[in-house]
Every structure is written in structure tokens, then in C-alpha cells.
Length: 389
Image (cartoon, rainbow, N blue to C red; front, side, top):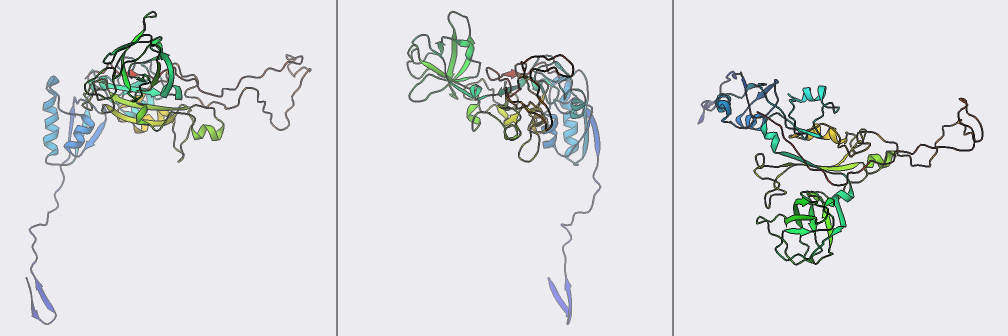
């Protein structure tokens, strides 16, 4: 309500009940045995949602929930709680099955970022048994991604069958996607590989089928089998040669794809091996990374796969290159065998002795150029273990 007491003088009533007075925010601190998160490092938490995201949910082990709810209750009345996860017998899960404590990112960079630990290719991002639910798969070539006629069936198999006789089971890995040439295009997930040498078999189930059904049609003996990577349909195409390598003559076939997935269902709610949950269990996807240590993307940022995993993954650290990946982690020279590059003013002498007197005659030996990266025969399947709370 407003009114004029005289010309040009206006009186107003203003409601001040909605004004919030300035109140000092309380700041607290607590050290707890949380489920996950950085260890021996102060982390400021502003909400219960952030508490769950970084340090996990309350656990019954050793009455951990009492500590968790103390932190949660404090955050119900304030927005600033400094938390330290205590170090007490906890270990990160690794691909080598031997647990290893990586306290936080600073500890990783100082002690493990150059591959100093012998624990396999990967480790969980934070310590705890939750890391035992992580899996990582690498696809490093077009042949890993998809290959036609990798082998044949060695017997006729009836519709509904799940155990399939094959000529060579060594060309398959658990999780591979196979097709038996059916006109309706059915694909199947490989759940077991039996390489007996004399009667090889694979066990299959219909891809992404919640009932895990078997063959949808009768398959004749001698049928060609197509094999694809477990996660091929989550990517636009196979890995190849990066633009960096092509434009800078740094070798060929340096790209790879990486998928991080849930093996038990404890992280995402879905196990990758359970019927119909292959893609539901996927946690992270990384496409067209490089094994070249100097590779750069269009914006000039590193696309070297350990660097990208460090910057972007919420779940894993890179720990070592796959043992089958020759030249991985190096900046190879793209010069092909037979090319001879001379600097201006250099001389090439044939039928003469060099300055050391060691080379005489008309033979010229050239060192082969490291023009490509060794490819893996099959996609990798690394499932982590050894993590403890």
C-alpha cells in the first residue's frame, strides 16, 4: 500500500519477512573409513549427494555407517565438511590380481604413472572392494573389431543349441560377438571357449536377450563364422591410424578403443555377463585413443591413452602397456624400409672404407624403419581383483 502525504512525497510499506540475514557457515572436519575415494587427502564436501559420489554409501563393515551418517547429518545443516579417508589395510584392485595402495592422484603421478608397478595393465581409481567389480577391454585393430570367416562350424547344430562345435576355438575370446551367416542377421555372445585341440567348442547365447536363448536357426557344418568385439556396436567404426600419425609420418595403426565395464553389477546395477545387460554394464567409453606417446588431438591435447585415462576416467588408472603391444608408448619413426634419408651435405660411400675403417665393399645395410605398432591378436578382457576395504 502506498499513498501521498504531499505533492511529490510517497510513502511505501515494504515486507522484510522474506529477507534472509547473513549467517556464518559452519565448517567441520572428519576422518572416516569410507567405501571409496581419495586416501589421506583433505576433500571438501558440500552436500550428501557429493558425499555419496566421492566416498560412496554407508557400509555395515566395522560399523562404518556410524561415521558415514555423522558426516551426512552435519551436511544437513551446513555446506562445508572437510573429509579425510583414513588409510587402514585398504588396497586398490588391479588387473594383476595383487592389490596395491594408490592413495590419490598425487601418489599415482609420483609413483605409478610411468608404469613402475608390476600389477597388470589397470588399477581401480580408488582403494576398496568396489574395484573388484571393474573390467577393461581394449580393441586395438580392425581385425579385433570385426573379422569375417575366422573359422567354421565342425558339425550341424540344431536351433536352440548353445554349445557349438567349431574347427578352431583359439580365434575366440569370452565376450566376443559371433554370427553364423543366418539371413536374419542374428548375433550371439560367446560365454565360454573350450580349446581341447580335437573337439573345440564355444558356448553362446543370443546377443542382448534377457532369456539367454540359443541358436535361432539350424546351422550346417562348415558354416563360416564372423567374429566381432564385444562392444563393437558402441563405436562408429574400427580403430585405425590417427590424424597425428598420418600427418606427421609417425607410423600407422596407432589407434585403439577402450571400454570400462561392470563385472558384478555392484557399481551400475548390471553385470556385463548377465543376460541382456552387455551394454547396460558399460561405465565409460574412450574412442580413437593412441598408443603413440606424443600423439595429439585436433585441439592440441594429448590423445595418448594413459594420459586420457588419467584425465577422464572416474574408475581406473593405466598401470602398464599390454605385453603384446610392441612399440606401445613410443613415438615411432614412420620411415618405411628402403627409404634412405640424407641431410644436406652428407655423403654416401660405396666400395670405400668409412672413417672407422669398418665398412668395406659394395654392401649397404639399412636398418628397418619401425613403421607400425604390433597389434593384439584378440581384444583384451582385463577384470580387476585384489581390492580390499
